[in-house]
Structure formats: C-alpha cells, structure tokens
Amino acid sequence: MDSEIKFSMKKYTNIINKGKWIIILITLLSTISGVKLSINSGMVTYFTDETVIIGTEGDATNNQNLIKTYIEIAKSNSVAEKASAKLNGAVSSIEIDKSITVNMQLNTAILKIKTISTDKKKTFDIINAVSGAFLEESQRLYPNGKVQIMDQAKEPTIIVSTYNIRNTAISFIAGLMASIIILIIMNYMDITVKSEDDIVEELGLTIIGNIQKYKTK
View 1 (cartoon, rainbow, N blue to C red):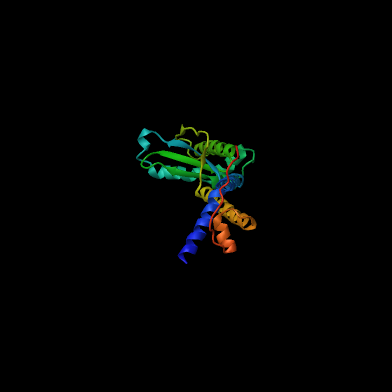
View 2: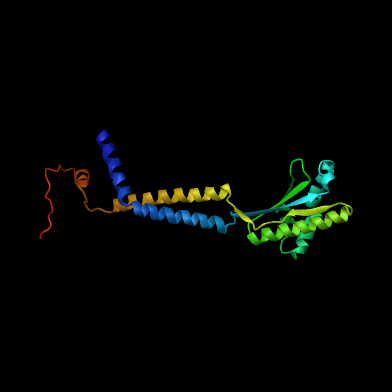
C-alpha cells in the first residue's frame, strides 16, 4: 500500500516537474488578468488631501467648538452643491459628499479634507472644488472669520485596497490549480509509454532489463 502511494506521488511529481513552464505561464496569465480586471472594475482608487487652518494663532486652542462647526460646514450639502457647480455638474453633489472626509488634526486649528475616487483626474478636481466652495461658504457664514489653505492638494496617489489584493490572490490560485488540472488531463490522454514505471503500472509486467541507446559515430 505504501509503495503504491509513493509511486502515485512520484508520478504526479514528475508530471508537475515536466510541465512546470505550462504551470508558470498559465498562472502568470491568470494573475495578470486578475489585476487588469480589478483596475477596469474600479477597484483601484486614488487619494489626495488638503489642509486648511482656521482662525489666528490665538484661536488655535480657544475655539475648538468653532473648529467643529467649520468641519460641519465643510461636510454640508451647501458645500457639496457649490463644488458640483464649480465642476459644471460633471460630478454630482451626492458623489462629492460620498468621496470626501473632513477631520480635525488633534489639538490644532487645522482641518484635513480628504478625497477618494476611482478616477485620478476626478479626485483632483473634487478636492479643489470642495476646498474652494468651503472657503466661500465659510466666508458667507462667518464674514469675520479667517480660513486659509495651508497645504494645497498634490497629485492623487493610488490606494491598493485589500479587495484588489484579494482578487489578484484568487486569480493566482485559480491559475495555479487550472494549470495543474490541465497537466493531469493531458497526461491521462497521452497513452504512450515513456518510462519503466509506465510499463509496470499499465501492463503489470516486471522489467528484467533494458537496452541502452547509443549514438553511432
């Protein structure tokens, strides 16, 4: 029984070893397809942010409640609608609202506006439109307030999401399994005798000797 198991393991190991380039090729193509699918289906996202400072130096520690009010202004429908108008309606106020987050830097008067989108140009356009709309709306509601951009938004960078990595991993495993199955099927369809082990397994005969093949000069 043990000898049969060892023989089977040896047989499948030989099949995989002989077809290793097929395994590598199919697995590589499957992985590349998975990456392309992730990109085309919008799983790759872009990110950028901009920082805004509220008030003067003396206001930084005294007006935390006011800063929270500014956060709500930045997240308001009014800002989203003005930002959409600045983009000529190319991006809806609803989409803008979903794509931005606004947070206060701890113990400071600094707000960070973040934008995430599946389109690089749209990400940059949204952050600029939102920051512009936020400054205008802040000035309208608090004419005597002071709000200014500290760090301008930079070119959006790619975020590699766990969902994208998972898809790539699934494509890799699927390609690997498919290539091994193809090799096994190809081996069973091939009825030619390639080794002494094939004679023993298929015909049940014992090998008593072999004839070496020599090249003639």
